Structure formats: structure tokens, C-alpha cells
Length: 450
Ligand code: PA5
Image (cartoon, rainbow, N blue to C red; front, top):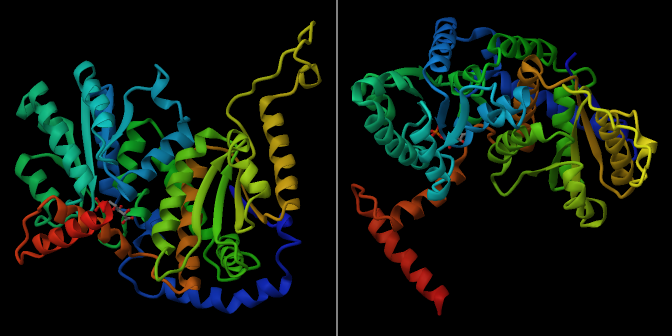
């Protein structure tokens, strides 16, 4: 198995009877997740994916690799985080800085900040560029703005006809949706976000796979890993199914007042994977005034920052440590005759060994300090393990959400900021609601200024 749940550090925090009490809830969640549902296409995706689309993704990726040295992926939330996580997991967080890695993969449309976009615009001046705009709804403001700006730049640089070959669109298949209509109009190659897969569960569709393949990752291996996880975590038996057990433990923690789950890893290459986890769990469970708050740290970096809080701050935290058991590189601490830095006691040891010792020392200190620790062991950071990891956490999220009693597949709360922003920006609407809201918001802001 590529991933294992390790519960030995929970012994003093969770009793056997507490696991037993979760079993009926897990069974009910399993039934709900497996009953016909318009959002669970990702459950069988590792075996039931569109093979023709998959082969088109590989062809497009290979063309893109020949055409450009900067591939700009435009998307936000579930239409962005998975691809970034996968590329950094498999190829390393420094992917874009290594000259051998071409094309570089850059991300736009995940904010509205002009300074960030400006640096990508400068990139377009010096590099050969292709764009991939990704939006299931086709109407999300952040990527739509970035695409409008970058499309104009690409068209100026290459001309409208040549640009058609350099722009790729991943969106809903419905020709009536804004982005699909635009793609059809302009003649761009398109890829589909399946109807029954929501944004944050879509990394193993074209949403993630095209950028991931462009970065030179083997997407066959990724699907193979996910398919293995689908088999390994199918059975509704909490004692044998680590995925279900993890979902249960999260809910045990929440019931004990541990309201924050801190994803910890010891590898900067896991940073974006933690961002993906935070979005998956935060957007799936944070509703109806319930849910764990997902946060993340990279140790040992954050042992010199948030580590203090974890050790001695409010006791409302538990940690889920992703313990990657192998490293890609082997670097040793050299011997130094003078030993002025006093480090010769480490000479000959690998950084991997020392990092793992930091993990052991930290977990013992944190559990001693009253912070329960779940450990998820991962063999290595490669394609197969990424596919396996994604499936494990997606399924655990579905089960955990149903145990909690929320719908893990919607995100109604995301609309609130959009309504205000559109009203303040005077977005035209049929019934004049935006104008009324704008007046109310402006009055509110005026009162706050007094
Ligand atoms: O998980 C989700 O559904 C969201 O995070 C979406 O992915 C995000 O809001 C972007 O939506 P869209 O792909 O429609 O632009």
C-alpha cells in the first residue's frame, strides 16, 4: 500500500469505545456517499474516465511542450490547486526554477492582484506562451479577468489565428455556458469538466491532468494510483479501511473541542498539496456553522514560527502529519576538521535522516503538549502516490462530511462576497438588486467610517 494511517500517537487521546461509537455513523455515511448522487463522479473516475479525452490531453500536452516555454494556467479554487499540488508533489516546488523543466508552468487568475499578473505579463514578453483557462462554471470573475487580459496579449504577440493553437479551454460541456461558447466561437481546443464532478474533486479530470501532463508527469501512473486506492478503500469496515477511519477520527476530534486540523509535513514540496487539502476540506465541511478549520504548516520551517503556538497555545488543535518516508535526493552532512560549528556529530548523516528525526522529536513533544497527532505515511512523492493520496483524501472528505451532517459537495457560502463585490462594482442585473445592495453596502461603510 502506498499510504497508511498510523494511529499510535493517538492512544492517550482516543479510546476504543470512541472508535466503536463512530461505526454506525461511518456506515450511514458510506451508504449516503454510494447512493445515486449527481456529485460523486470522482468515486469511479480512476476506472471510468473518458479514454478518448485522456488521449487528447496527452496529445495536447505534447504539442504544448513543443510550442512554448511558459504555460500559463488560469483558474481558481478547484480549477487551480490540484494541478499545482500535483506538479510540486511529483516534480518539486522549485519546478519552474530548474532549467531542464520546460515549459515552466505558471498560475494566473487565482487572485485579482495587478502586481502578480504584471509579472506574468512580463513573462509573455520574453517567452513563448500557451494558455489554459479552466473554469467549470465558465463565469468565475478572477480567471475571467486574467484570461481577457492574457488573451489580448497573446493575440497581439502571435496574431489571432496563431493564438487559436496556443489557447486551451477546460470547462463544462454545455455550449451555452459562457466560456464554452467563447471557445467554440474562437475555435480553441476544449476539454471537459464532467457534470458530476465538482471543482475541488476534479484534479484527476482534464482540469488537473492537462497542466500536470504538460509538466512532464506521467498521468497514466497517477490514474493507476487512484484506481488502486479506489479498490483499497471500497469496503465499509472502519477497522480495515484507513480512509474511513481517518474520516471518523476527524469527527471524534471535533467532538472533543479540537476545532482546528493542522496539516503538517516536513517537505516544502508538499506546500501546495496542503493548500489543496485546505480547500477540499474547508469548502466541503465549513457550513451550517459547523466543521473543522483546516490549516497547514511545513516543518521544520514552521517550528520556528507556529511551532510555539502548537506546543503551548490554545489546546483546540490536532495535527495530521503527512510523513513522506523517502526522499528523491541523498545529501550528507560533510565532516569538517575544525568543527567550529560543532556539527561533526551529524557528519555522514543524510538530511533525510535528520529530517525524520525532527519529525519524531516534534511528534513526541506535541503529543506530550496535549496535541493529538494522526500520521499518514506516504512512501514517496511520485505520480502513483499522488493519485492514491488524492483518492484517499477525497473519499475521506465525502465520508467525513456526511458524518458531520453537511453536504460535502456544495459551497453556498462562496456567493456572499461575490454578491457584495458585484453590487459595489455596479454589475448590471435584470431586477436592479445590485443597485439596491450597493446603496445598503455604501451606507454600512459610511457608518463604519464615523
Ligand atoms: O470546489 C469548487 O467547486 C470551487 O472551489 C471552484 O473550483 C472554484 O470556485 C472555481 O470555480 P469554476 O471552476 O467554476 O471557475
